[in-house]
Every structure is written in structure tokens, then in C-alpha cells.
Image 1 (cartoon, rainbow, N blue to C red):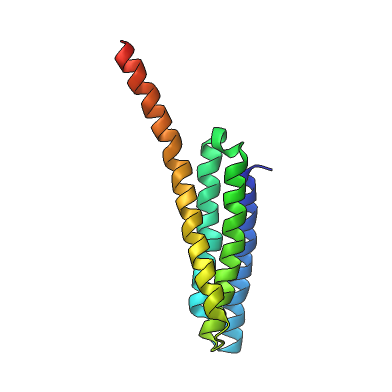
Image 2 (cartoon, rainbow, N blue to C red):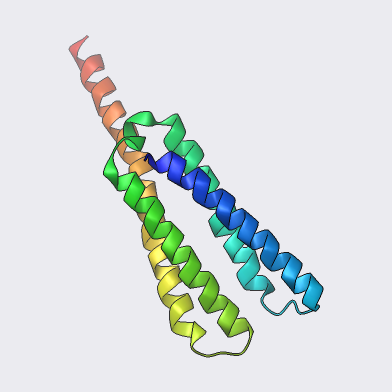
Length: 135
């Protein structure tokens, strides 16, 4: 499976889960976990969908194992982070280490994504520079 396909599928599942979470908060008239719900939607639905678009538009990257690993790490870290924030918002201190670890893993994974984005551009620029120098 390509990273783009995994990203799109996970984004849809997290988007549905985020909507169900929001509806459950409304039904229970308890919005204490709203920050966790919002982060889950942004990191799960929006970010994963954007990763999927990027990887789909760059098939040379999408065919490698590193983007696939990047997406899986993002999925797991987003779930851990959202659970941690949700626990913290509902006054359970056990959520602090989960939120902390999740946020640090998400940051590291975003740095990996950034490297994947900039690396091909640098390679292409280097190729153009050597072509220009040869002319």
C-alpha cells in the first residue's frame, strides 16, 4: 500500500471518529474534552489528508517505505496525543505523559515529513545547477 492511500484512509476514519466524538459531547452536554477533539480532527483528518495529497502528487516519494512509516507514526502518535489531552481535560493526570510523548513524536514526525518534502527539491536543484554549469 502506498503512503498516500494509507493517509487518505486513515484521514477518513479519524474524521468520522472526530465527528462522532463531537456529537457525543453535544449529546452529553459535556464539552470538557473539546481541545482533544479539535486536535484529533486537525492532526487526524486534516494533516493526514494533506500528507496524502502531497504523497499522491509525488509518486516517486510515495513508492518508498519512509513515507509509509511516517504516516503510521503520525497515526499512532495522534491517537496517543488525543487520548492524553482528553484525559488531562477530564482531570486525569495520567494524560500528561501521553500528551507529552505524543506531541514530541508528532513534532519529530513533522520534521521527517519536512525532510521528505525538501530533500527531492534539493536534489532537483542540484541537478539543475550541474546542468546549467555544463552549458
